[in-house]
Image (cartoon, rainbow, N blue to C red; front, top):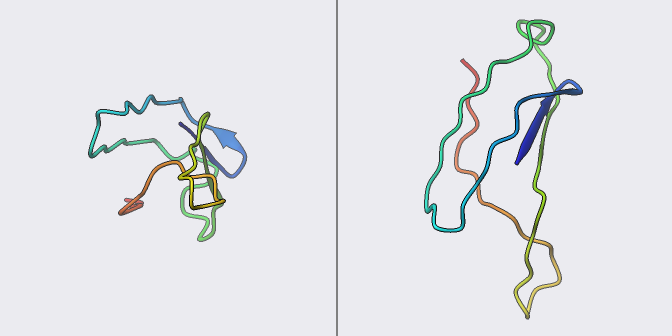
Length: 67
């Protein structure tokens, strides 16, 4: 999984199929901190489909938190 903040890529992380829950911490680029608005893009290398669903599925996120 890769995450980018305001167009700046952060170090990639690996998700494993056996993981039922996961948590990652990323440092926000200094240029984005305190600006009020930021664009966060999350991308997966692979997705899957359930036969009765046409959507490409990846992972489910519960909380995004900026501290």
